[in-house]
Amino acid sequence: MLANTLELVSEARRRGVAVGAFNTYSIELTQAILQAAEHLNQPVILQLGVASVKTGGEPLVRATVVAAQRAHVPVAVHLDHCADLGMIEQCFSWGCSSALADGSHLSFAENVALTRQAVALASSYHATIEAELGYLAGTEDGVTVEAVKASLTQPEQARAFVAATGASMLAVAIGNVHGFTPNPPPLDFERLSQIASQVDIPLILHGASGLGKENVQRAISLGVAKINVNTEVRTAFLSAIATWGLRVGPTPDVRRSGQDWLDLMREAIAAAQMVVTEHMQT
Ligand code: 13P
Ligand code: ZN
Ligand code: NA
Image (cartoon, rainbow, N blue to C red):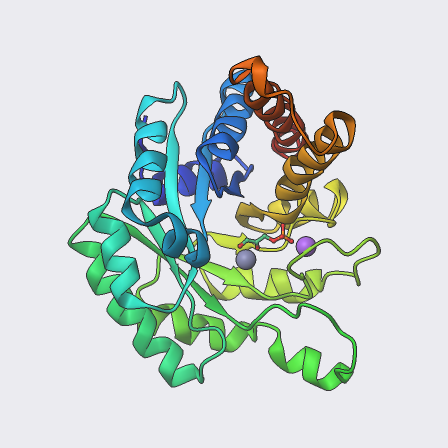
């Protein structure tokens, strides 16, 4: 069933756990994520990125919402990292439960202004706004330690930011990075607990690919209630397709009347589902 994101995340926080939020790009990846959630009987969040919404448009967004409605567990549909208020409103009108109004690269004042407008929009759709203060580095290469520190969420600013915006959930930057880094730099857990003491809304951890169970569990114990995973799941799906291609060769057997397609998707879905399951068991 389609769920309210804030309710899912708040309930998870009360229980001392987190909701997994997995990026989807297609109906097959959605299927993989929902099958994992249904087998574990856990709620889940399906996330669509801006590029996916641009490519797939209303049909992709609505198909994702329908898949959530038909699921046997509570499922929220979330627009990930979006600084475009027009797209946020469009996604709400197509049934999305929440959006990350991402002003993390703007100045503090501009971030507040963007997030406030998004919060006002969301209220007329009974939707939830995640906000982001501080931003994630994709890589530390060529960046000074001071520059990295400056990009992290400042606990005192977080308090003022939440009060000024009315956001319902806050994404934090504590050294977490987007993408898969085999040996990620340590997370700043001291900073996370300071943020948690300043802010009473649920905290969100982005960039969970490559972080490992221990980091994720520690973050949850300090108030993180939504964990974002993208790269690991997408990579598993794409690797399965690549492996299938190597096995089948450049020309699939055209006489198999669609069986080749079903085999390929079944393998890709199974591979992605396995990674989602691992994350949901953290
Ligand atoms: P990863 O790609 O590191 O899992 O990050 C996901 C994310 O933060 C989506 O918003
Ligand atoms: Zn993210
Ligand atoms: Na990551």
